[in-house]
Length: 315
Image 1 (cartoon, rainbow, N blue to C red):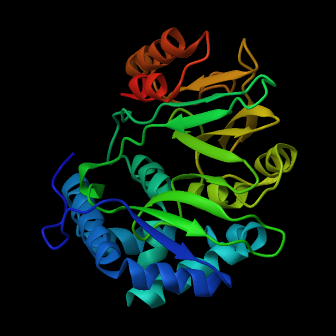
Image 2 (cartoon, rainbow, N blue to C red):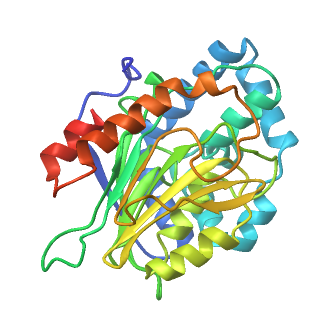
């Protein structure tokens, strides 16, 4: 990974507790991670300028004006939009800038639509392994998050308090984003990986908001209903694990397809669709993704792997 912003000292992963109303928890996150969010935003903009050879400010303005995600967010996850606005206020930043920072996968899709990049990025691998009903055995879920080096040094953990019937959650993120992956107090975990071969759109609910909305579910069945009902803006795989089992969904602007693995208790997934029909990218662009999937399957496809084996498989 590339070096972090020189203004941010190397530090252990910071855990930020955030409870109360959506705006209040966002403000708490913004205040606690003010320096990191500002640094992440600067690094993100510098990365955009390098990749697109455009002025970053003009590019982000175009990204926001050419897309229309907020109507769907207001319908499906209005509290999370309030959280983003609170985070901006706490960090002393413009609300549009912090909202744009949430659009990690959507910016990649937007860039592709502008023909600024054609190469399929090598990104994330994910897995979920059910407990199989064994007494005391855990269900496992995990992934690696292969982001640009500019994000290094801005990692954080959000401890989101309960909100009415919605359970507390522990959410891994990059400072300024509402989430990248997580688990909630009801025992539900969600991990994600991109599927660039599927359709995306300039409207619908962005990935970060889908992730956090799923973590508001109390049961696997509730999360499944949500992922099937939400209008997705971006091509993404969602793997969901709970004490009741594991499920795998390939979502895109064209709809949602459930991937049903040969062993329903074990989901392994990388960056090519296993259930949905691809709409772009030649098969040879999948070589790296297919190799990573084969590696996960070989390492974790049988037996009862422990934490060390899972970590090694993702390495």
